[in-house]
Image (cartoon, rainbow, N blue to C red; front, side, top):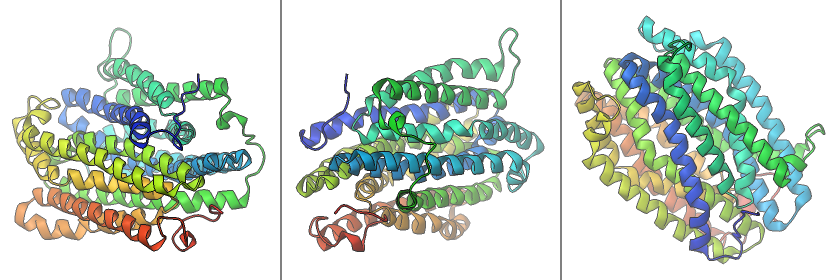
Length: 462
C-alpha cells in the first residue's frame, strides 16, 4: 500500500501533521537511543556517562557530515517529485549516495585511527579516557550505518512517506533497549562490557535498521533501488548535493565543534558538570529533536510545492508549521523549568549533587526552547526552498558566539555561565531565522521571482 501523503493537494494542516507525527516519533526514538545508553550507564558509574558524553560530540560531527547527502537528496528529490521529473530523481539519488560513501569512509577512518589523539584534547582521567576510547572505536567501525540510515530515510521522506522510517526506527529501538543492559552489565555467558557494550548495542540496532530499509525499498521499488550506482555521477548533480548540503553540514559541524570547546571548559569544573551536560542535553533534545522531525516534514512540503510552483501553499504551510513547532517549544519550556530535578533524578538517582546541578541546567535552557523550535522550523522551510545558506549562516555565527559569551558569563556564574551562553544564543538564532524567512519572501514576491539571487544550488526550478 502506498503510504505517501499528497503534499501538493491535501489540506495543509492535515497533510503536515500526518507526515510530521511519524517524523516526531522517529525523533523521539533517536533521542531514546541516547537516553537508553545514558540511563543504563548512569547506573554503571558517573565516569561511564562522562566518557560517552565526551564521545557524543564526535558522533555529532559525523551526523553533521551526513547532512550533506541527506539535505541534498531530501531537497533534490522533493523538488524533482514536484516537477514529476523521474530522470532527475535518479541523478540526485546517485550523486547523493556517492557523496555520502566518500564522506563515510573518510570520517570513519579518522575517528578510528586517530581517536586516542582526539580524546587526548580533553585531558580526561585515565579511566574515563579508556572507556571513551573503546566506545568511540566501536562506533567508528559502525559508521556505515550512521551515514546510510539518514540518507535512506530521506528517500522516503521526499516522497511524503514518513511512516516507513518510523516503523523501522521502532524496531531498531526495541532491539537496542533489549540488548543494551545485556551487553553493558553482562548476563550468563555474555561478559560485562560496560561502555563498549553500549556502543555495540547501538551499532547492532543501526545495522538492523539499515537492512530493513533496503528490504522495504526493494519491495516498494523506490528510487533507492531503481537507481544504478555503478554509473558515474553527473558533476552538475554532485554540485547540487554539495551546494545544498554543505551549508547545513557546516552549521551542524560548527555547533558540534563549539560543543567540544565548551565541554573542555566544563571539564575544568570537574566530572559532574560533564555528566550534567551529557544527560541534560539528552533531556533537552525532547524539544529540538521532535522539532527537527517536524522540520523535515516542512522541508518536504516546501520542496514539492516549490517544484510544482504552488507559491501560496508555501506561505500557508510555513505559518501552520510554525504554530505546531512553537507549541512544542512552549511545552518544553514548562516541562524543563518545573520538572528540572525530577527529570535528572531518572538518570542519576543516587547523586544529589549532580541532580541539583542538572536542575539548574534545565531551568536556564528552558528559557530558549520556544526560540529554538522557531529556528528549527524555519530552517526546514528555507532548506526545502533551496535556501540552505541562510539558516546555516545564522546558526554558525551564533553558535560560535557561545565561546566568547561563555568567557563573559563564567566569571559571574561559573559553569552556569556556559549554560546561559547556550540559551541566549538560541534566542537570537530563532529570532533572526524568522525575520530572514519573511525578508526573502518579500524580496522574491513570495519565492516566485529572482530566486537565483538567493538560492543555494547549481540548478534551480525553471
